[in-house]
Length: 553
RNA sequence: GCGGGCGUAGCUCAAUUGGCAGAGCGCCAGCCUUCCAAGCUGGCUGUUGUGGGUUCGAGUCCCAUCGCCCGCUCCA
Image (cartoon, rainbow, N blue to C red; front, side):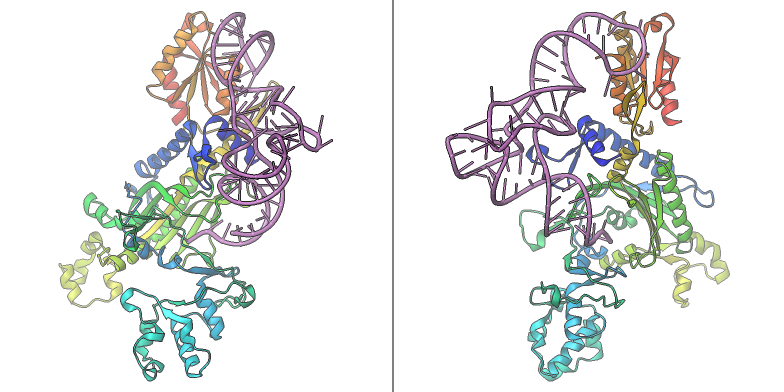
């Protein structure tokens, strides 16, 4: 089975089209057609129903509470400073191919130029100063500092005299530690002058420097200047984190609980490829599950298992679905554990990520607490009520005055830990399309059939008069009009019955209801099953109940 | 981002050396048709991705651009 057949079917039958196709399309953007939007909506609804409305019982059999939000795509740009999307990715970066660590390209270059170990700011500054005193080529021309405006103190023009500058105090050095250094000239292009060795592991090759700021920029308001810059969100997660306090204060929830969101996100990918798999505009289905730090590993395993089970239940064959626990060297620096749920797509020999279930610790809320200055801690009233008498206090505030240790306080007041199951709606839609595609033979004729799970199928049933006479179309239309109040159904009276069945097979309609000569005699119709073409007779009056049973059961 | 290949009807593809843009499938209408792409009749489908250039004449040759595919690269 190859990808081209799926792309072709998607176009031919109206699942997915290239975006703005009559103008030649646009790389990395796709439109969902009439059947595609039904399929993707069914996927999003199934996720919302199964994760928000009715999540499986928790690790100890308890109810799991998930609340939904729908946040703005454009947020205050400082959100992206806190999340690390701006600061961490504004500058050209290089990666170590071996240990996978990432460095600021200018720092690596400078460290190599100055022949110092490591890429810490203090190391670099010290080396620069030493170079100056050794009257090497003026290193001040190499450097200046660009930090927050008030901290800009260019080395070559900071108004201090030489002597002072040569003897940076410990505090000054410490102050420099978190200020970025940037080269005044462009990065060297020739690979010969580029340091190829990783400063961390000392072995791996480094990639070419590349910009990692993949956020789409726009301007808020009429003025297109720097103060008006805003970004299309590159992930939906931050909208949840910045609303943590709002949800907590408005919803009478207690830890643990989750906040869910389905929404668009945008990344200006360098190289979109593989149909809709890596698009520049895509939709995420995310939960941020907040819990007590002590329980976090329990919930991490819970969500990993719940999410894998969900895919399986919706018809993804287990041998193509591959959960993969990330190795320690792959993890983001803040993550305690991450499981990628991967699917073996036809376009690759390697399974590709559908979803990441990440244990993010307290990283995100701590970052926002730091950048916003707002308290995002949680007070565990139940724990305090349980243990306060043993501590000999009634008031938490009074107890704080008695000088408990940080560890003790954090038993009752802490930044929650977060488990993040983050799924790609478009990626799963693509996986469902790949999984469903099948070719078999019926009576010696080749058949293309999309074996969607009935719950996901864009159209649940077709209503067909066997022939266009003997009042069959009238009876069929009556049934169609009754069923369409409850299900997406399709009426078709054009062409031979076999052809009509095949049309429905190709768009994955799980059931066909056919009105024939017997219908007028005893009020029964035939119900044909898509997957095996087996037909049974059912009373026409029972059709809607039968469909309901087969779709949900 | 780099290298290679490819863009012709809704889909799959033809079109001799640069010389009338075609076929199958599909789709639509009608006839026929009592269960798995049957048959008959008729019909629709194109600024050959887009924009330039060469030529008496360009789907075909040249340039640019957009898109798709493959391999590297990469994917917070």
